[in-house]
Length: 260
Ligand code: SF4
Image (cartoon, rainbow, N blue to C red; front, side, top):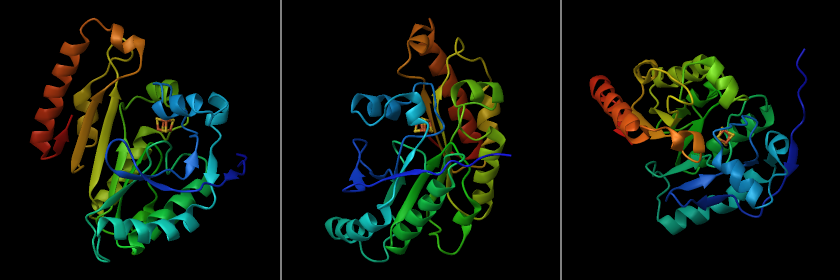
């Protein structure tokens, strides 16, 4: 019998912000139960700025309980600032950059994420959602904009790799299955293959991974950063050049938009 731990609530003064990467984001949780050990950049930053007391604390997320109220205030202001009309649907808000909107084992965060996407869509804007969890089937429902983009972050198909490096995240087959479900219902989908491991971290076949998600519309491929193990791999540059060539060729074959 599994025991569900109730999520701890926090409040924030603001929610939507423009990231250093140039797009608007919503992070309505602090921490992430997926506990990635690549390491996770968001975890490193949380530690540096006093928002996490360590790995165990990070893996027990806190929910921003006033997120819907903040959105009600901020969405009209954002639309006014951007000059986005009521029926504009080309402007996307990203969920999430410093946490995961559909993290495994936290139903309150899952429910809040759906509520947030619904509110953003009701305001005439679309969402770009990236997860290492399970994308809910509800996202295919009538409350959600057909131009929402749904994505999974995936760097392997091997469950031993997942247990070592993304211990709390969803199994790969479930992640892909949930994305496929939304793709089959006409939603734009993407795969984020980063951080892809060097062979001294984990040896695998990039072609098998790309082929497993070959139904997506777009794909991003990137290397393994912030790790001395990856930096020490002697043929790192040549390795990533070779993997990039394989990814590009497969993207051409499957008509996938490719970014690196
Ligand atoms: S899923 Fe993302 S935010 Fe969560 S621990 Fe992993 S890298 Fe960090």
